[in-house]
Length: 448
Ligand SMILES: [Zn+2]
Ligand SMILES: [Zn+2]
Image 1 (cartoon, rainbow, N blue to C red):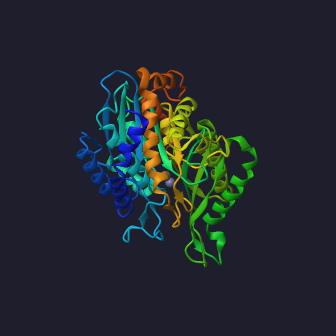
Image 2: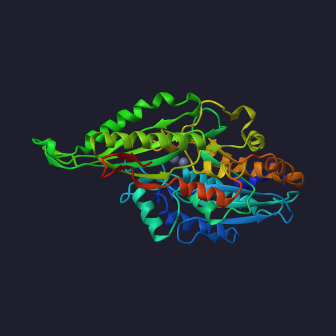
Image 3: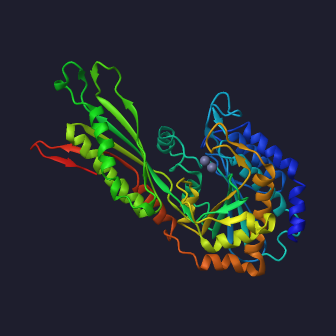
């Protein structure tokens, strides 16, 4: 099948792809609650002839297309979840969830890809296979909901791609890519990577007392404000090229003005461009927080949850993708941008640490991401061009005995060599402990 024929077949699906975009826009849900969109898409995929493997206890599914000839398996994603943006014009009136990151456009595009992969002749001359994965919970879920799901044993992790990988759903996959909807001047962009992060809560526990007699209390808010200062005091050790971000907020800071606050809660996030830097900065931030609590005689309970790992996107795969993208929109509209560094986070970062992977962007969106102004302004760029590029990239990777896909796989350097190693590392990032120990002999231990 030529690219021209493939693009025509995708054009013929335009109305169905518009339906996907619109259905999802009006049935948005946040991570691990996307049942409506998941069931809707599953029915459409089945109508195309696919046999699906459903995650079952959370939304999402995957399915395979096999060329019948041996070769690498490419993993493609579209993401299901929206965000809590109650002021968005399409927000769900009950939950406030809205597609303010364009994941509905990704799902429309991948549906177009799914449709064309089923056309007779698409796999002619290709080797290897393709897994299409419709995945939940990219935006992360709230800490308390995640804790509830972990306690029930429903999931182990926030981040649907991480969860699915940990379940073994991608054990036979060799390389992965996806195209996220974006804005900007170029129709397609690829960047070398993105930041990863760790999500943190520090609960300072002092002793409440009458504000007129503060000597009877221990002021937890003073401990928290001191923690802001102690974190700020270590910022000058951050290297510019590590793109470190530490951005705490206070979510509890006392209840009434005439009482010494007995509890204060700081929520925080540490982000950086490399796995090791993230872990090291996180350790130093915990030490600074514990020291601030100790300074005023307060206790502090630290709860760390892994955010996503930094993205380290594969350059060889990026090159093949740019070729495929250029066939849809021209070389001048498909660009590799090494600057500025992407300081956002995605669970595609995790995938890039376990197999060669790329998280690319299409055009087509307008308004700031995650804001009420975000919308899909150009359906052709966001959905049609994205689907066509993905189909063209699949062909490029798998033609000539899957020569290019094999080259990518053979030359990739990923951080984690096995699923077990990866899962153990992610589990090691969970922290749930008291960080200041007051001993009977009067000494104080910072237990971080
Ligand atoms: Zn987003
Ligand atoms: Zn997104």
